[in-house]
Image 1 (cartoon, rainbow, N blue to C red):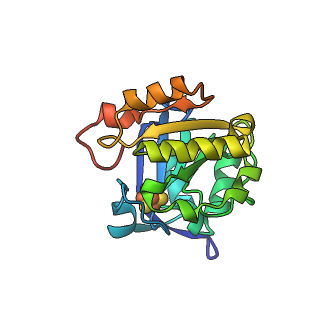
Image 2: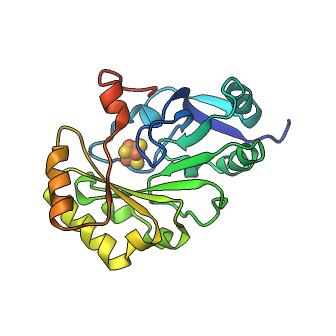
Image 3: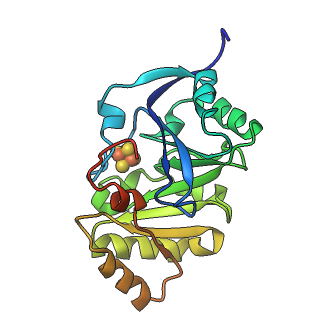
Length: 218
Ligand code: SF4
């Protein structure tokens, strides 16, 4: 145990996966503390501003045992800031879990085990973090992975569309477009996607429909 990696964790919780191709499945979430970005619309500030706890991997696995067989999502904040995430991936996969990683797109995906489903955010201009994206990461994605573009405006939509087309991203992996709730009406985004015949998936955040009043732990 002496050399076991310790992880700074914001929260561990069991809920419904809300925003990927796995949306709707029960899922155990491991939310890492800390983030290297500061998106204008961030709804998870508590992951880098609030209290957090230190867990060993064995402690996390012990908690996960209460939920046999369920999907696991590693999210944040930004999980890849902590080296201990790599032995965690290995141990979760060895335990036979399906593992999703949600990452903000600014750090390299090169060393992520191939069986982990990578959900890579692409930050659009209204986040003010679009110039922090590491586009080399597109080379580490395969068809089971996903690119998630969250957008607040027509300018974001145009920017993301141009990016998708210039890298042919929809041919490499699933691309989703999600509106920032309160900034871009989903029906507007749906109309643009149809009008432009874009091969992307419209994604709405399931947890904002299910638990509109909650701000964390969903
Ligand atoms: S990457 Fe995620 S957690 Fe970090 S600031 Fe942006 S939205 Fe918030």
